[in-house]
Amino acid sequence: MKVLVIGGGAREHALCRSLSLDPEVTALYCAPGNAGIAEVAELHPVDALDGDAVARLAAELGAELVVVGPEAPLVAGVADAVRAAGIPCFGPSGEAARLEGSKAFAKDVMAGAGVPTARSYVCTTPAEIDEALDAFGAPYVVKDDGLAAGKGVVVTEDVEAARAHALSCDRVVIEEFLDGPEVSLFAITDGTTVLPLQPAQDFKRALDGDAGPNTGGMGAYSPLPWADPKLVDEVLETVLQPTVDELRRRGTPFSGLLYAGLAITSRGVRVIEFNARFGDPETQVVLARLKTPLAGVLLASANGTLDVLPPLTWRDDAAVTVVIASHNYPGTPRTGDPIDGLAEVAAQDAPDAYVLHAGTRAEGGTVVSAGGRVLSVTATGKDLAAARERAYTALGRIRLDGSQHRTDIALKAAGG
Image (cartoon, rainbow, N blue to C red; front, side, top):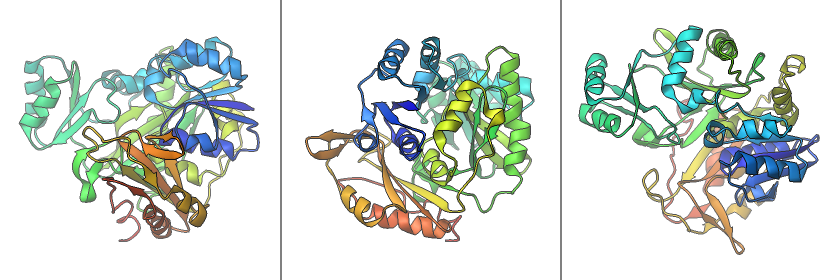
């Protein structure tokens, strides 16, 4: 089949890489893509938020499946426009994508589905904000109700910092702090059947030891040797299936990728948030471990036939990904710096380690930085320690002036 992927980050590079390895995929396109994706897919310019433009491009290319990567096009209803043009699309409708687009909507769905989550208040006035902060106490958890590219959440002991963030949002969700480690669990669904993938853990803080500001994610690993073997089944039963059932009951069926951000608390599993698409950087490690060819699974979600799909198969290998970010990320990142060493990684570390591009573009014969998170160096190995060593060895070959990365991704889980 011919597949068109929408987006241009490391998540989309991971998706394109997996699709390029699928023998069923006869042609692979990406719009707008990036310098790395250009090596595995044919790039086309498009306004990813313009559903009609995306649908027109898909029709021109003869695409038989469109995969919408990022959250903003999904919330903007791009998947609806593609489906209206009669082309199968992997990704929820604009209405169902409100599960990510509005924290308040997600809380309402969870209440209806009986899904365990943090107690919360939705606030729109300074008085409501003060009341909610006072009710929960420190540490304060303050979430912008709308999309904020993974950076709309502040967790702090400082009430003034919490209040300032809350006041900067039009509508804000303030909730109780959830203790315990966090887990990301993706599930592919067609609105009825729910197919969970393998869990991963990502690292949100910019600096080693979980210090520094929140980011879009600085690295991830899978599997989780410390997690209960029954975790996936438990989350499917108590979180994923009830949420999908509730959205269908409301007349807004959710088809695509449902991402549950979870806290494993002393009182059991609690949902921190839902996303309506593959997470970045967890996709990089989850797809590195998926053995089942990807295109058929995504098409079955789009066509409503997940129930007849054979069970997914997984590699025994562990996977680790480390993000290389540009100077000053997550503030205003510096861009336009040349990136060296990519050919060395391809020559010396493949196929066990490889580089997925996020914020890059080609300038002449050079690849330069074009965003905050620039590259995801991803590796597999017999266990986390081996995968970690390979990832950092490959990372050591890459040169980007002023760049930063964490040195402790998966260190604790690997026994370090």
